Image 1 (cartoon, rainbow, N blue to C red):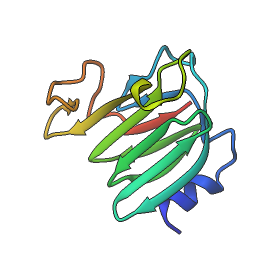
Image 2 (image 1 turned 180 degrees about the vertical axis):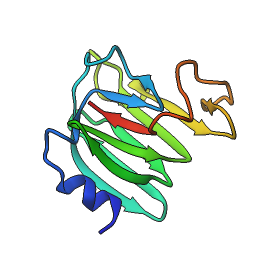
Image 3 (image 1 turned 30 degrees about the vertical axis):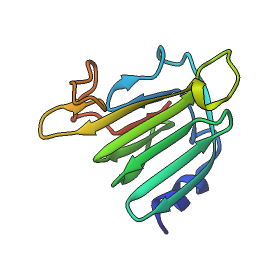
Amino acid sequence: MNISEEFMNLEKGLRSGSLCLFGFWFGRPMDNYHRSCSATVENDLLTIGFDQGEILEVWNPLKLVVDSHVLHIVGASKVKWSWFEYGKMKSPENLRSMQFIVDSIHILDGNNQIVKGASITEPAISIY
């Protein structure tokens, strides 16, 4: 079974919730609730789709773990979170994204800047 199948076989409540990427919260903790509705894997890219059009892309995902009702993807080489700006029409000009790229000691964004609050010692993905 591949990681996308493992993910979709989990209870809906475990694969939906607030999102934390390498220890960096998207919004305030428990402020947003994202409901996953699909997961696919092609080569080394896991793509998770959410009900409001958000997309979570995880390159080289390592091990899915459930710990105290929290879902973790333990590691990845890169994560990209894309969402539509809240309160606006879902159109290409309102699409936003954040990238988290692992280098040897830091998590970098798409501009090769260190992401404050993100750490390589945290799980790549946590859904609370």
